[in-house]
Image (cartoon, rainbow, N blue to C red; front, side, top):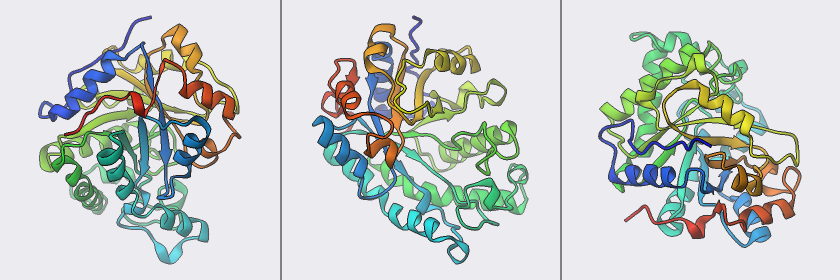
Length: 325
């Protein structure tokens, strides 16, 4: 198996902590996989469930930023939407606790309520009139609103840079699909949106603590090696179907000939850790999705979860080296 390693950050001004994380990810390539779990509420029932079942915690915790979107249309939102937003508020407090007290890795997902023209869950393309194709054109109302939202989020990210906390940053996720507004107008528009953010966050806001994670398996939409540290994809196999996901890995790495690190940005069931230990398919990490995916045995049995977290190939929180001061 060809081992995927890439220690050099795409951002030439990346912090030493970013370099340390990328070096570590390269070192474990084909030797282990980082366990990860997404949490979208401050209760973090997924972590409590994992600890109850396994006695351990994942090395990587994912946090949702949807409630930090500055243009949520509260006046035209369903009870389900309002509950999701309310339960998601202050998740960055949990992220701070995770890095400062537990010393774990963090990754952020932003279900971005569109900059304007939305109702209900406005990150879905069906719930907004916002035109992403216009947002990549300087001078348009859409572009100005896009930049305003990006700048708003940058202010929430800056304290992490000031404390030199590396973030696995996965913007415009699942851009190969039409379901989110950033992917609705096609992969080329999504690619341009990503590059606008990379330039804004790297050169204007100087967020040099971000590890840039591209999240789409389509070769024609790949954003480019110069702005990517890790390539990733999201997968939702059938319930209780655990494998090394070799086919999906082989598809993903076709998007670039460059030796990039490779990850499972989201997954519904955990991969087979025992099988990975044999085949050495070098997924750097996986992140199980939240709610029933990560807090019940509906998708992954308790036995499978326990077996995974206690396998030598699995990197859990207690095995993670320190990356922070």
